[in-house]
Image 1: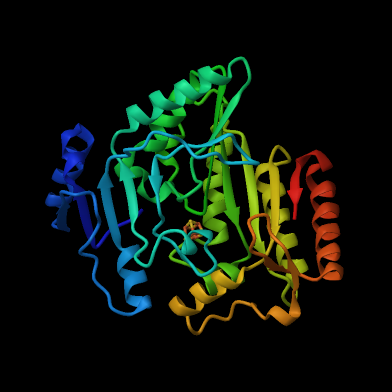
Image 2: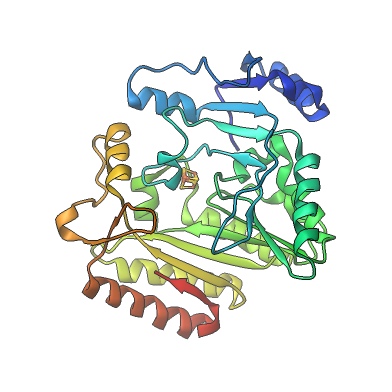
Length: 334
Ligand code: SF4
């Protein structure tokens, strides 16, 4: 669970009961509280890139989601569901590092009902087709769920929506408040996992693989459709045996009714610069000359593993996931 060092309230959030309740809670906890009347978030200290990053990661903002136009979320879903943004985790390669500014705070939107009403409009627009919403496109929503209750509201909402489905992904484990909800199988929970070598080297402030597996076992017992994202996969010495033991642990503890998405490590020039400014001593493998450059859709390219390694890696996961879970368990391997 996220224990912020400071909480900044947008004044408009106090017009909502959830905002007022959170203010009372953090006042009782004696956590530093600040206010923003303009909606601009200032007052997060830090001079160097590292300090700004650290202070941002320790800041929680309680605000109101003003624009209710949802971003698209292709290819895995139709729309992002903007319940929360940001994440307390400090993963060196996080995809959010290039998106959340120099002080990457976490934000809860208190107007959850309005957000879900808007989701309903999007669902109606596409009826009779099913509309899928992603709850973790710009966040990991689990560590702040005890404050936001956003996932609970969304899961219950989609539990009653014939033409809507919900999904989110997490590296965290506080799922207990979700276990008894009436999800009706309409929310898929995916756990992002990695080997403990990678978690301890790069995924700072996140739980171990065993802790994530334990949370996954609980959600599976509660009947939620379950998936695992193995990402990013690094091809280091002995990676085969370590990634294989993750697959075997899932098979032995959960069974075969799971889906997999597997993503090899890649980086852009911009992400590399960003990572080096916050983690100057990083040991992330980001030597351009050892990779293949692949042009991207939006004019910038990324460095992926070279063809031979990439093919070997794809075959490895295809073979072992198929053997242990059946080929239909593979969503994609890239
Ligand atoms: Fe980013 Fe996910 Fe790590 Fe959070 S847990 S810092 S969202 S990669």
